[in-house]
Amino acid sequence: GIQIDDNAISGNLPPEVGAWTLMKYFYASGNALSGALPSEIGAWSAIIDLRLNSNAIGGTVPTETATWTKLQFVWLDGNALSGTLPSEIG
Image 1 (tube, rainbow, N blue to C red):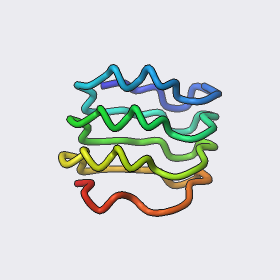
Image 2 (tube, rainbow, N blue to C red):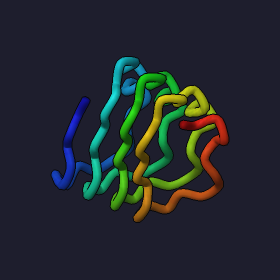
Image 3 (cartoon, helix red, strand yellow):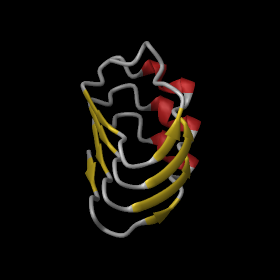
């Protein structure tokens, strides 16, 4: 996994993160990430714990995340997201 909490990282998550197909834990809370989540994160089918709270992420959670059937924890509060999570998650 990756833990980059509270590092003042800004900008969008690039689509290339989809190549991290074995990602189980991704912690990037308390940064300045913005823009929409790339649909390519749907390739993280092994993700268990996702923490993106307290950023400036907008848009909706991509429907491609429906493959996240192992997800147990998700922190997205403190962003500008809209819509709902796909019902298949977790």
